Every structure is written in C-alpha cells, then in structure tokens.
Image (tube, rainbow, N blue to C red; front, top):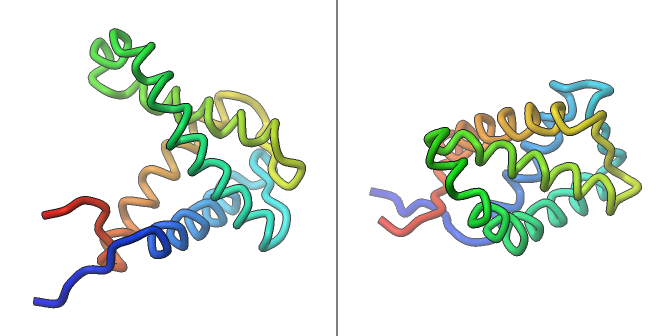
Length: 123
C-alpha cells in the first residue's frame, strides 16, 4: 500500500485551493484577489485557526457540547471574519456568509483530502 502524503505543504496547497473554490462558489459575497491574495489569506486563516480558534473553542465549550459540535462552524466563521479585517486582499460580506464559507470549506477540504489521499493524522 502506498504511503499517503502528510505534512504542511500538501495541507497548505489544499487549503489554498479550497479557499479559491469557495470564493468561486460564494461569488461576490467572498472575494479573494489574486494568486498571492489566496496564498496569504490561506496562511492567515491557518494561523488564526492554530492560535486563536482553540481559545475561543474552549470558551464556547458548553455551546459546542449543546450543539454536538456544530458551533465549531460559528468559531470558524469568526476566524474568517477576523482574516478579512486583517487583509486587504480578502473580504467577506458579513458574519453569516463567513459561517456558510466555513461549512463549504469544511466539505471541500474533506473531499480534496480524500481525492488526493492527504491525511492529517497518524494512523
């Protein structure tokens, strides 16, 4: 059996591609300008998800338990809104479009990881 690729680069490429596809799906409600805009936005969202999202998830733990984890999309939407405030190359219409973008990103990321055989976790 072939070993599946792991690491930062394959996951980052998928994140950038998923961000581009999400901007195509959402149209003018989510705009990412240019190739470097996509790369920088994917990096900023990744950093926000790594550093800030766990803290917010911990603070909203009761809500996450109550909604069986669906509140995670609310936290992810907040990270997308924060990224749009930090970057000139990325904009999102409002918070609820960011939550929808988080759902679309989650679905597309799962599909792309399965399609390209990328895995995030150790077996």
